[in-house]
Image (cartoon, rainbow, N blue to C red; front, side, top):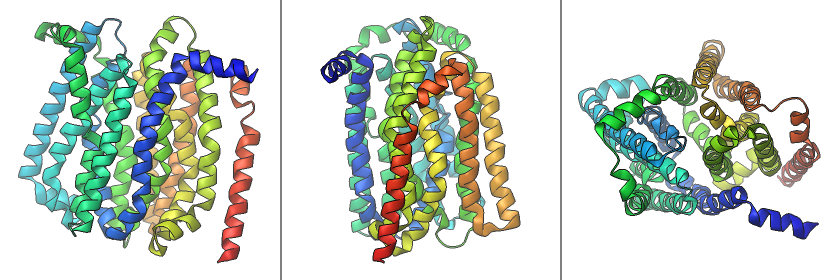
Length: 454
């Protein structure tokens, strides 16, 4: 029976695609996580606070730079249509980057003042380059996803992590702080663009000859729901995540934003390792499953795999985080471990929900997704604002809890849209609860032993 199961896995293109992406992404994420103990000793917590604000601004501006038409690239039936969507995405990326450069040049002091980070003014000029690299990489990555070149995507992610980590270590070693963190952040999100671009233009030149202004206009109109709804959706989602970090940096004393960012980096590593890989493959295969009427079953199997592979280890990590963070990163980072524990429910729910969020694009429910994300934006910012007003000492904890509540609702909406409900819910959870409980008990045991040793 085990042999038959192994043969099934070998024959499954879906599993193969995930394994290819995970293998390359695992290497990339391992590098980024393994260098963190060194980075926390080369850079002060205050440096990470500047990085947190910079990354927040970059995230907000870059996520919609392609007008979300990059997400649409795997969906059309014909490659010629997808190629024109890719061209629109890259043109939009260049335009938004140029606009950001003008704003940074004209209003640097105002931007730094709004973020309450005066030192940030020295690094604002890097924002346009970060937007261009990150958004162009996204567009080319979705083209590679469409062509099912998952090994190329995996290799590009490895290049990103190596270049980002080496830059941060090298600059930190030479004392160029926090510049090294900022440059490394840019490279870790866009350095793979050369590999993806070379792959696309060497293998798809014939397809790209179909790109024309008239076709771009036609495709823009055909997929106008993405700029209309998905752009606002992406902005609302990113602002809901990143703006509270900027608020926390401006109102909290010391290095709270830096500790929050370190906690997020560590806990979100599984999202980059497995969750993003599954999301890529889900979007590549989902449209055909939808057309064949198998989307509910496909989504249910995806959820089952996500829960079994990631939920338990994340819960374990959250339980032991306070002690492990102080041991690995230094005692001054214990606060980051405490925040990681608070964030665990949020990260677990995000890990399960985010890969299947692509169902909203597959079934063309961008308007509903926009409404959901706008509600999440007001929930998160409202929670942080209320905490600032009542007691700013707990603002980060309120932020973490609001994220968990948001993803509970997201999970329900995504599964309903995929047709997963009733008995499929039961089958999805079958066999996962004992596994999760085992990880939780293991985490409590480790935490008790570690506390006894100290």
